[in-house]
Image (tube, rainbow, N blue to C red; front, side, top):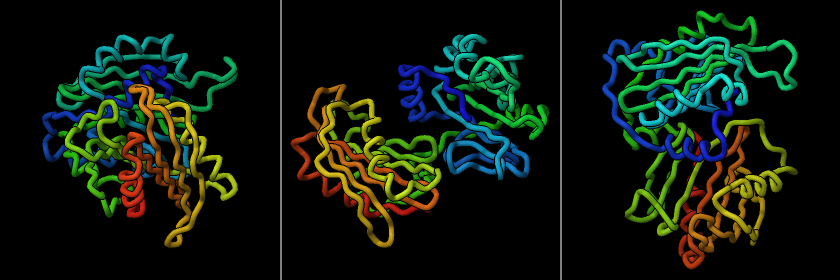
Length: 326
């Protein structure tokens, strides 16, 4: 699984940075055709024939398990910090015992550092059951963190190294292209518009003229899909509440309504709650709706100022009712 590379502060930086767009000179057409690009990703690879684009994360995984590769995109300015902070000691605490590191030159002359090693044993002992590879990429206007893992004996070091170092970088996708690549469709935007797509599986929408929303001057709505084992019916209310409380930008939740319902043959769960927005200290109303699918769920979270609730809650619901998996 992906390394836990950042503390809470760095994780916040990572989440924000992935939202940033950039422009990079695309590779030649012939080379681009050789690579397979995960939806919305600027980093493409030539994976083994039994590794396919993942539905759970941005990257690839082997059919039946045993090998995976995941990608995180950051702005170009993140590369020097990554290169400096990725010491052997730091990476060990984050799940990688480094056995080797080497500078590499990548597509279009991009700079990179390739780390090879093993997962950090949970108890500090025992034989590792997997090999790990970590590549950080610094291109002209984009940075990449690429993490690969394979069970011992499942794939050769040569194949995995070749997959990472053969990375191809294409130009930035337009927002429309990123939205079109999402694993779900929004049939009715109800006046909202997308302003950011994230990780190939989520989108941030707002209602108003500003793309950057501060102090909740505009309502926001985030829609994301997750692929996982189906949540049993009796656990859905607890799952929904835990998902809501996990939001670290709000506090003092007071749930007004928490209910499951069935609509058009699909199971849903909805929570409406009051809370305090931590950055602005403003009272807000939160609407969280989860559409349960056989292989996961689609989750929509709308946040608006308390004085806008009567106007915005019906619009949140209008968008949610139009959600469909692709």
